[in-house]
Length: 241
Image (cartoon, rainbow, N blue to C red; front, side, top):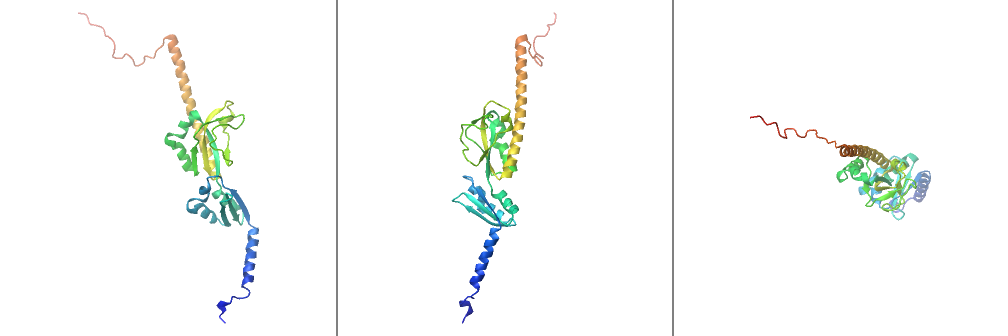
């Protein structure tokens, strides 16, 4: 009898034992389920599955599965550390950063240059501006109008400058999308940027106020700034004869 035509009797037992071992192994693993925000599945997976492959390379990660129907990604890892490391790669969050309308142009820079640099340095997937403004009420910590980012995954935080201003402010939201740590880095850079722009705006405002006061004094007392005027002009004395 040719032995290769008749598998050994104990083969199914070995397969059964292997299945039991795998089940026992996975039962001791950490299982982490992440919800995928609407419109970010491609970012989670990465180009040609780059993020999934990167997560698989982490020591201790056993399985990474994307459930399209439930908009979830499930990570199975031998340790919590490995699961969290994979989470840092695969978790995508959204955050809103409000910018006062009157400072928006200077804040984002020509052709969005300043924001583009912050995006590159922080490594977030995207930073984009809402198409419409909204009113930010510091007392209510919320606002009505705009409706650009009506998404449960958004982190609509209120900035420090809004807390000190009781008057509702017109703002344009910047939506930041990326991994949690990278989004936080982007927010820190945006916060520093808004402080710098506010300082410049205050200086310009001070200069305007000084000029307005000088104009009032000049009009009231007839004082004019004639420095540099009249040199080499006017009639000189005529010689006698």
